[in-house]
Length: 140
Image (cartoon, rainbow, N blue to C red; front, side, top):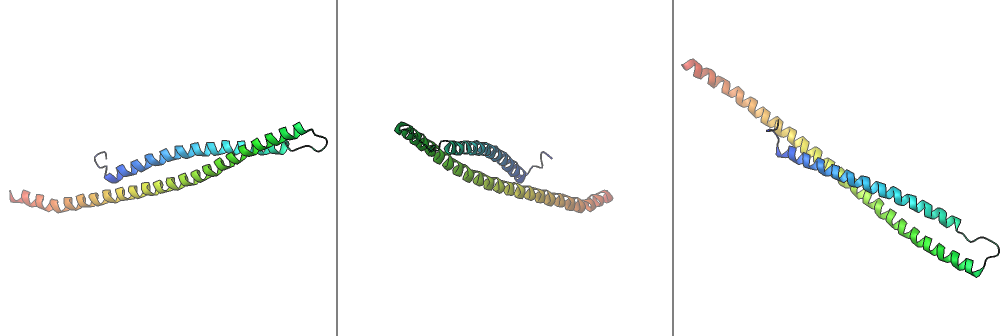
């Protein structure tokens, strides 16, 4: 079978390796997306906890609370942008993996078809060669 490897078999193997590589990248993206989503949830809970309390507050407390709130919102915007970017990347990776899988399957189909054609040609040649051998033996 090692000698029967067609270009399609090699192409299918290449596509399989590419799919595996993309799957590893996809796993990394998914882990990063999970981590960023967790950070986003933590920041949202911090925003809820840092709301200005009703009652008497000093100017310093208001300024401090406002500054922290601005910093947290800035981080939240950054994390939301990162989440959006990672979500798009995950979608793109899924698309690329699906395309690679399709190419892999097509290569396997073509390899099987090529092997079938070669086998039929060998069988046909063997069938046509048998009478020649019998005639050659009979002539002796």
